[in-house]
Image 1 (cartoon, each protein chain N blue to C red):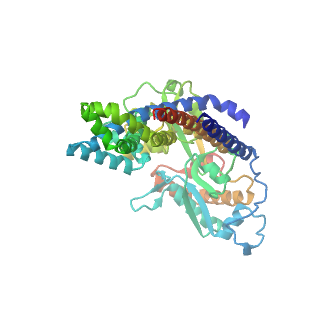
Image 2 (image 1 turned 90 degrees about the vertical axis):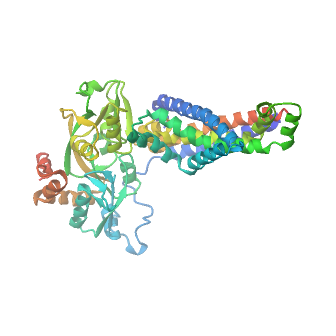
Image 3 (image 1 turned 135 degrees about the horizontal axis):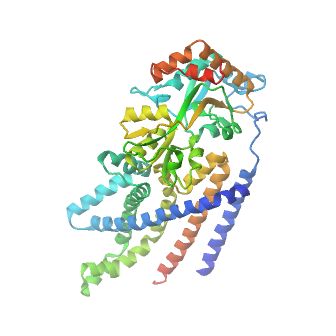
Length: 298
Length: 215
């Protein structure tokens, strides 16, 4: 009996060592450099010949579809309406963008702030149009377009809370955020804070309203919008902690795609398209074109 | 990889602690619920049997993820607001309890009828017969499936991450998304789960040997 036990145990250990070393070897392989030519482009038809450099823009044009990632649970940027149709500012923006860069249509794929960048790197989608904040860490992984909107970031607290006004007041408190949001880093800088991450901003804010978290860090505009739509018992604190520049992201080194996208952004700022979209989704007093012009996007 | 591991391991240990606490406490509570349900199903009182069957059918018939979301995000609509860890323990316990009730029931039914009759014939009460004669034998029969469920539960605890419990899986996701090194982090966390469950398998083998000794 004991012998059999030893045999099973050692067999299991050996198998495990084998498995673990295989995984480790796989994990230690350097990630493929973005410059490396794709070994096989499964989506491109073999007849489509060597389409120039094989860059993302060429692939997208050959395919006739731009694969766009967005959360689809993030009103008013991307959300499902009563008829389960995908609508929102980012959706309108994406549809306008494909028209301007000469691609027949956009296909929307649901992602989260945690999966957007890995998804770009592993070709799950061509571009993320979800208002990702431009950050240094992200810039090392992906390239960003010109900013196409901005958002002021504030702390949201429960309606009856008057003690939290600044980041310092959140020390040792519970901070709610959507997983993968740019503000997670800001929250990590608060001493002893307990960081709670959620599938989306609505759930994070809901928990602040319920008292299961003390503060939410995120866009003032989105927070106010969600609180009003869902009757959440939260309010923003007066201070704007930072102004985020929100942009689209795609694979590094895709200059053709970046040029095409940036040209379209400039045109949409110049001809009033962005202004019209802002008023439609954010209200009559909002003009994202004016905001991004301040950042030098003309 | 190594320097990432050095950076991550204090957090992984913290996550492991939460995972183990969730797993062990839910398994203990769930087993108690399971035993009570198994006895209720074998009882002669029709109302108890119906109640047990209703519970089993709901909690074995719906996904654990849905149960977790219901308790954490659903219940507040009825004014019941629970913290993340209690929510997770309640959901995991109720879920594992439904499986455990079937494990216990199969063990109890697996004990020869004659054992019970013999217990009664020497003057034991129903409770005595159950505790001294039926249950020790039932446990031996059910031990492999019970161990199986414990290991499955240890992995199911990863679902608690959706209700903001910071356990192993959430730690891996969090460090992964701040370093963009998902592959390494998930390999690490998979290895931790595997080591934990390998230890449990060895423990189970030892327990089964111990239980077999009586024969």
